[in-house]
Structures are given as structure tokens and as C-alpha cells.
Amino acid sequence: MINDVLSETKTAMQKSIEALKVDLAAMRTGRASTGLVDKLLVEYYGTPTQLQELALISIPEAQLISIRPYDPGAMKAIEKAILQSDLGLTPNNDGKIIRLQIPRLTEERRRNLTKSASKRAEEARVSIRNIRRSALEDLKNFEKEKMISEDEMYKGRDEVQKLTDEFVKKVDELVAAKEKEILEV
Image (cartoon, rainbow, N blue to C red; front, side):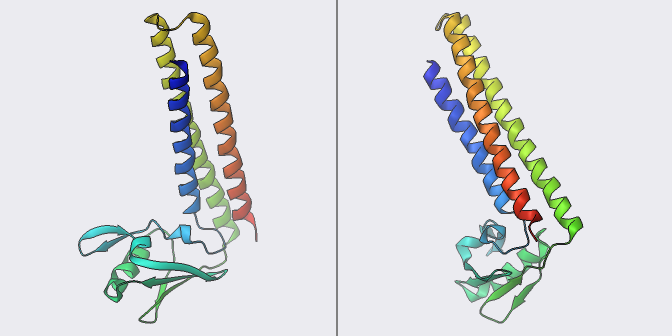
């Protein structure tokens, strides 16, 4: 019973970590990354489609993202999606490939990005704490229904707290690494 709660809790917390990783990968740093545009939604024949499904995305240089659409007819839609995104990048199109030049970040922009990374980390911590609260409620309900003893409930509560501490530490490590990457000149 307790192991089921712990397993569900660990799985849910891991999903929060994965969501944070995706969010942080999409944040622009001074260097090119496919994570910036992978999940960008492109209006392709009336259907929102992720860019990674429409084109080959590569990094030929440290400051350049190259996007080669599988269907040349999607070129305009991809350009439009990039311009409408919050990336602040202007696509260069030669008819076959879209190139995105990643400019160096200003000091002010770096500070704003680190604040944004911290905000996303706090959202992940809140998510993890909400998962902890839910797990603790489950344990209390099991104890009320006499499915587990009071001692087991306290032991389970301690295990849930250990999991919470472990995942909050992972969040802190991820955001610290991203902030270091952002501040790197």
C-alpha cells in the first residue's frame, strides 16, 4: 500500500522534472540549441504541428540553427511561426534552408533569462510540493480506513519527504546549471 503511494509519487515528481527540463531547454542562451525550436508549433495545412516533425533541425555553427523543411511548401509557415514566437529571432531563407542567427545576449537579457529560469524552477518546486501533499493525504486516508497502521503512516510520510527533498534538489541543480549557461559569455 505504502509502496504504491511512493511509486506514484516518484513517477509524478519525475514528470515535473522532465517538464522543467523541456522548459529550460527552450530558453534561449547565447548559443544555438535545437531545443529552442523543436517544440515550436507551425500552422501546417490548418493543423498545429511541431517543427521537429516538419523539418530537419541542425546546429552547423555555435551561433546558427539550420532548418531544412521536408516539404518546401512549409517554408512560409515555418518562417511565420518563428516570427510569431517569443524567440526574438529573424529567419533567413534561401529557398531551401531557413537559418536562424543567434545573437549574443546583452547583460540585461541574461539577467531577465536567469529570473525566468528561477521562476520556472519555483513552479516545478510548487508542483513537487503539491504532489507531496496529495501523497500525504492518501497516507492519512489509508490510516483512517485502517488499511495501514499509524506507524506505517509516519514511516510513509518520512519516505515521501525524502522523495520531495531529492526532487527539489534536482530542480535546484537543473536551474543552477541553466543559469550558469545563460550567464556564460
